[in-house]
Amino acid sequence: MLARPAAIHVVAAGMTVAAAAVVVFPFWPWILVALWISGLVASPCERLLARARHRGPLAALLTAAVLLGIAAPVVAIVVPLSLEAAELVRRVIASGDARKMLEALLSPTNGGGMPTVEELLRLGSTEGGRAYAFARAVAGATSHAALGLVVFVTVVYVRLAHAAAVRAWALAHAPVAPAILSRLAAAFSETGRGLIIGTGGAGVAQGTVATIAYVALGVPHPLVLGLLTTFTAMVPGVGAAFVWVPVAAALALTGRLTAAIALVLIGVAIVGTVDNVVRPVLARYGRLDLPIPLVFVSMLGGFSVAGPAGLLLGPLVVRLAKECLLLSREAAAT
Image (cartoon, rainbow, N blue to C red; front, top):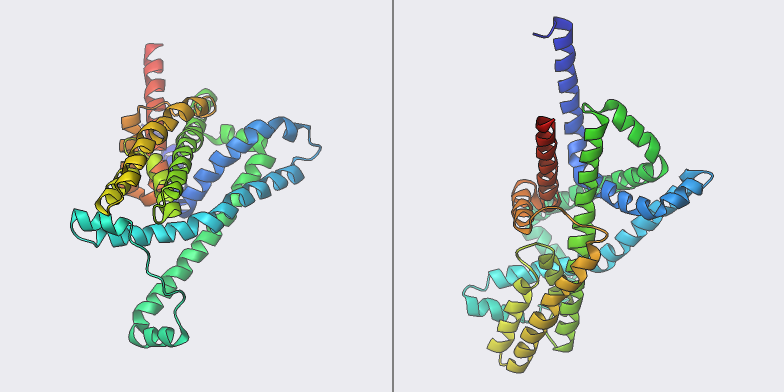
């Protein structure tokens, strides 16, 4: 039995750690992605950082490059296309039966441009309460994203500028032995590399090929469908066929049989095989040591628990659990 002072210390430590977790929890997706991306940047740049007389300025430059490299395509491409993709998915789901869903997949978007001042005033007078609630929700999400971006930049910079100090601090305060912490850290980094380089890179490659095919065949919404293809290709067990097969069926239903056949041939012969060509190459730089069905289930489970960010959290938790089981088995064997 623990002595009374020791028991008090254990309880106090548990409460303070729990409180710290609650404080950090709102920004865990930003911290997670920042640690993974900074690790990817640090690996090829470590020699350059080590030779630098002062790591701070070079780390700041690398952080700015990371931020620009992520923010520019997200703001210019991903956000507008994501909004169009959400509208397209909503319209397809609302179409009713399967045939109408496929036809809606290729139907043109409603034009109309920006609403006029009169329309905005009329909307405000009739839907003022809901408009105010929506505005508050948008403002809250924007402020949270801004704070998350600050956290992201801070974590990336600290990881690059003070890597040795961060590692020493973690080793000094971790409740496990340094060897165990190193194993868990390696599993953590492996998950990030596997998801970002392996899964993400293969998805982008398939999405790019599919987008070129959509453009060449004159499919409506080629960029939006290409973005959806990229996202689905990143999910093991779902794949790019989750998008291009319905698109081919929609082309056939709307009388474009030649384009439908061409898309099927491209999807099977090129899009489907790109993964088999690209993934082994990317596996040299990032491979997640988990069976594909387990990655798929962990992504779905993470999504159901934590929303979109759970697509990253699920595989991470399962990979760390696997490493803990390996450590337990090794300890039992000694």
